[in-house]
Image 1: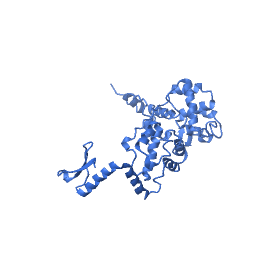
Image 2 (image 1 turned 90 degrees about the horizontal axis):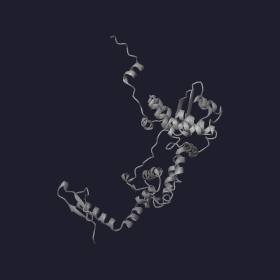
Image 3 (image 1 turned 45 degrees about the horizontal axis):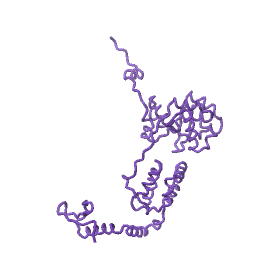
Image 4 (image 1 turned 60 degrees about the horizontal axis):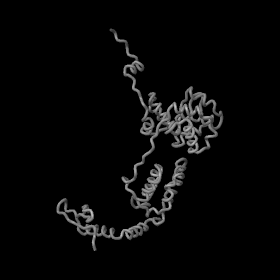
Length: 341
């Protein structure tokens, strides 16, 4: 019987045995100097080449001895297991992932029977979100030992390419609020501009979050649970006074889902011809304005609720900072003594 692999011995390099692929001519070290071990490895390679399906069934039988669910566990089971470990907004995101049209055909498939082509096909028909969450499903299954080996090696996963994100400009913001006929939404966008908070945090503000004596707005970030305390100035004060004096500041927007508020904002942008921005662009705008004006980074990071300097700098990376002349800066901070002529 013709075989694909054959054994060779080389007296150099420590006397290692090598396996030669007759089809490609590639020679691979078997990392052993024992002839019996080397012959067994080469024989196993030839058997695997002749009967791959039978080998898979044998492998399943061995694995089933330690994991009874290996032959029936599906990707939907993996998804449900992850959802049960999540809470709050993260849980909601995973529940939305279960409705991803690109993922739906994959969910009923048995994990052990899934091939790399199946994952690639799913990602090609999906979006960036599909790529991200499918990676997490795959890695979770590996960590739980529900997969005996990676279906796709790490290097073979398509790169995650996010859409370019940018800050909303003052001119764009002004155009949106000028054309916005709904007073509540107009004041909501104003608060987003001046506070730089996430849309869910702004929508959940109450009158009790405002300290008029200290001129601060304080709230717990829904994403991290950390406390944010932001001081407001004279530009935002009239807007805050026009909002309800008790309960939620935005009673019409607070119960909405994030996607609904985002859709309303997208409509407002289309009315004035603004493209490439979302409600999250207000956070980028706040970070860039802070950096451009020389606002201390530690204050800006605290105000936006960023727990990492790297994340905060990613938000402010597009800010255009004009460096003042050194002599002007020195005279402004510490006036120099007059020099006698």
